[in-house]
Image (cartoon, rainbow, N blue to C red; front, side, top):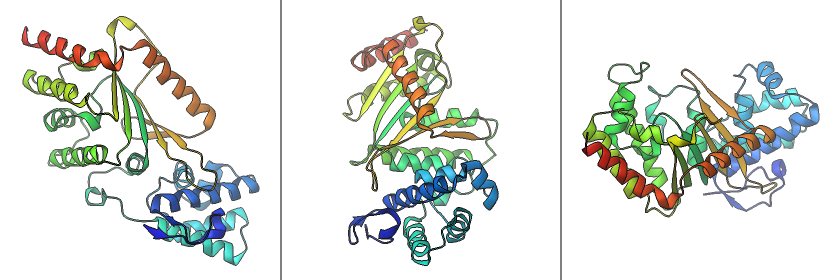
Length: 303
């Protein structure tokens, strides 16, 4: 925990202890206000300073783990922030908020588009998801994770075990005392699909049944009888409220084969939240989940 720097940048009181995450969120809020005051769009800003189109959203959302001073200065120039003290405050926020993520040792296997997700997942207090193909990574056994990764055509030889290790470290964060709440919606086909051999699948289902006892975890199964619905794989992450406005920050993460989308516009996020709520209504209750898992395991034994 560090002591407050850059107080003028986000309106906080000097001396208030804050974390690097709060520093990044404060920096993002401040830069967003300057951008909007200048009438500059996110993509326009990104292209003007030579960064990926998604970078400005990551910085403003507080989930860009490292924000360089050069980028902050370039944005200050673009947004017309000429006041010397103001620029210093913003640079201080960037410097104190930038810290290597716990995933730094996995740089060789991490695509650039996935790192912002890890920062979001680390900072979130609530993660809501819907999966129609695999058990969520945070709930996978090592054996199941290994089967999923081996089936990924993008996995290079020798990378598999490293990727399994990364997934298990993500789970450690979830299981920590200060870990986020997780609300996972699974299509029933996920539990019945033979991603791995029968023994591995049985252990995975048994693991899910054990996890149902965790107070921070809610698992719901969307039955096959639900028919067609508008839900595709999605993750909604909520960051707790930080200064200056104290409001939670929500981001939707949509992973594709070679990239990912980060959706932050409130109206768009609201749509995905409604989809998750609709799927939750269609699903069995969390209290039903252990019995459903045991029934599928019995079916598996009878094959």
